[in-house]
Image (cartoon, rainbow, N blue to C red; front, side, top):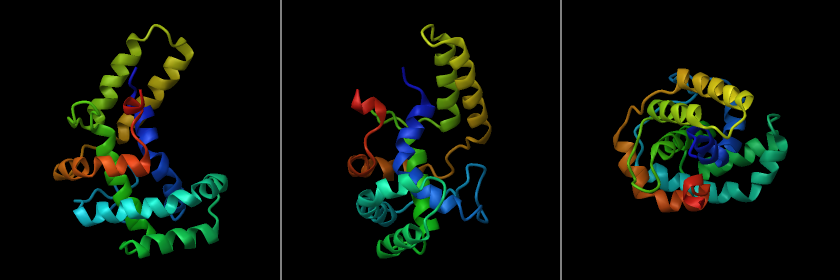
Length: 184
């Protein structure tokens, strides 16, 4: 069974480590309800993001260990990685990663077809409602979580990002890990 919230979590796992540091700094001007600024991506930004992820990977266990308590030394290291890879700041790297993740979460791994996040959540809620194997208490909690996610799930503003992310999908899968459907 494919559930978008699981896929989104998986697609965002690597980004989540980075996001802890970025989000600790508070909301920025221009952010949408999802907590990041949607932007038109460029080839260079995606290439730089891939390079940065390769440098972030070796310190990911330290980032996980830090949890939601940002370590100033790790933050400085992340900031240096961001700047070394062509980003003006860690915030910009985080926004690019969030935009990439938004597209990846809507790409069907088999067909390459893109579906907007609100539509994916609605489809997954319907699928979950038909699930006879999941205990009702867990199902109710998952549905409540998905309903909450639906409130802030904004459509993609820059549709051209889909083609760009598709272009780099193999490299992104290498640095972020493939979506759960690809692992099956």
